[in-house]
Amino acid sequence: MSDLIEINGFTNATLGWKAWLDVVKLDSATPEQIAVLEESHPKAKVSDYYLFLVHQPEVLKQRSIAFNAIMYAPGGMPRAERELGATVVSRINGCVYCASVHAQRFEQLAKRNDAITEVFNNPYTAGTSARERAIVDFSIALTNQPNEISPARIQALKDVGLTEIEILDLIHSVAIFAWANRLMLNLGEPVFTQTAA
Amino acid sequence: MDPGNAGCLIYSRDTFNSNSCSPSNCTLIFMTNTLMPNTIDHLVGLTPGLSTYDVRHQRDKVVAATQKSEEGLFDPNLPGLTVNERLLVALLACVLTPSAVCAAEYRRRLEEGGADASLVEHVSNAALSKIDNVRLQAILKFTHTLITDPVKADQAALQSLPKAGLSTPEVVTLAQLIAFVSYQVRVVAGLTAMKQLEQQA
Image 1 (spheres, one colour):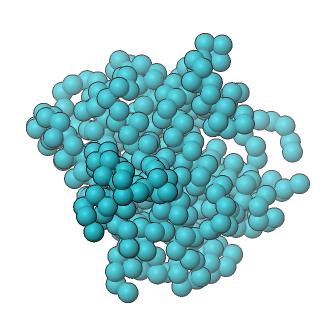
Image 2 (cartoon, one colour):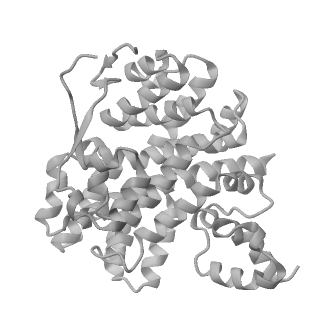
Image 3 (tube, helix red, strand yellow):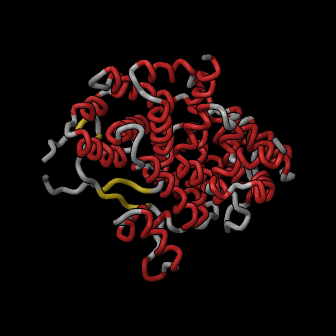
């Protein structure tokens, strides 16, 4: 079992999430809404998040396709590193819920959580290797100052061994969490359960 | 190479299987897709032959879903927020990020759609206090918070939208739109840097 990490208000514990406005009720959902829920996430039908977003089913559908293609596509950047980028962005934007989910995914894939502890402590110095440091640095820069992403930033990723497709995957992973954080963070709130792991 | 063929090479991979592109149907594909070319390729200046273009299109599912997300969010048939309200939100998001290239694109679309020139000017300057429409001001204020400091957009910020008359589906459209533009500007920024590095080599 993973060790519980609780630092600066961030955690790797499993959290719930509740919407601040009315969600779509399954028994009054249209066939299109049901279909989009089913292809978005295995638990979408019992998730406030998906039941809220499915008020606009076509928009949710395309977002889910983009999200899944970015985070789960084979080849390119190792999935653990995409999850690291996602966790860094969520830490910077202050999305506790997103950070908890993607901290867990990183640990499942990488079989360690040292980098997560560092990201929760201080993302600006986090990274357990030169490659991780470069990934974290780039993730912060693209989150905070997208207008200042220079060719030198890309070169810094190449210098630690990232290939072009890995760099593209990192750009996508960071960008999709600019998107995801602004839904999770701004449409509802995490629910902290009391049960100890 | 005839123009139809060139167009086919540029646009066919986004929405069509490249096998479907033959000399006999190329012109049709070209005509169909020039109506709605790939926005991010256009904004970054990516064309076949650039390695950044080729790398981007190795993730074709992402390319297609990104384009369809944009088309869905600005679809005139999407009920609720008007297309001009949505374009003003996108413009403000780009102005605040900032992303000059994306801001110019949304400004152009507003001008081509005949939007109120003074309104476009106020939003271009992020001068929200000069907007007297209560509904639009609430929409743009929410946009401002989500772009500049998302952690500050709390429950009260969200509740300000129904109070200004927005329905829940309109709130969902607005949030998805702001979030999508946050994504789009970062993909554009990252790809632009990749392309610049490629061209320095």
